[in-house]
Image (cartoon, rainbow, N blue to C red; front, side, top):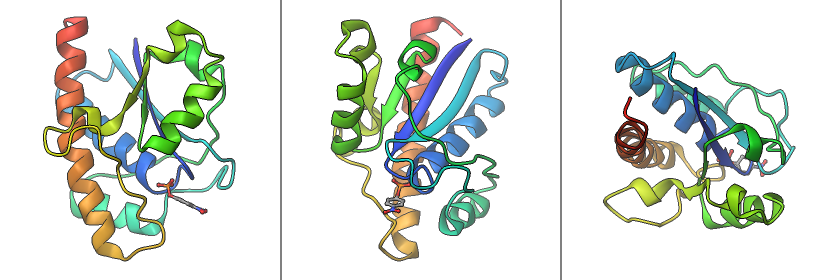
Length: 159
Ligand code: 4NP
């Protein structure tokens, strides 16, 4: 199993949406038995909570159900997962500090928009304090980035 973990701050807006979008693509390609997908937050503020209603709504508008519950990223995730995808630079630095500074751990860490051909390496902006249009914009970025990420994983692992 290839394991992919998406990480943001709260694990209720961006990373559950990324998880849902990526799972949808994985399932469309019939790869559910090859690729496992999860999400987590660098904070523990929303442990056990469903995604933000605005993330659920934008996902539903695009035919995607979100079914995750908030959890906090832990150092064991660096052993369990093959790809750890941070939504922004702050999440990335937080995770890097938690990787126990192992070279192996750090090598699994990526920025979501490393995979976006428009605005490569930029942050997925935090939509939590904004309006609904922020969530549509985030959906677009995630959809684009997730498609490229899946392509890259398929090439790398020949699946
Ligand atoms: P997320 O957004 O990191 O995309 O899940 C946030 C969710 C909650 C908070 C901040 C960002 N918060 O301050 O509770």
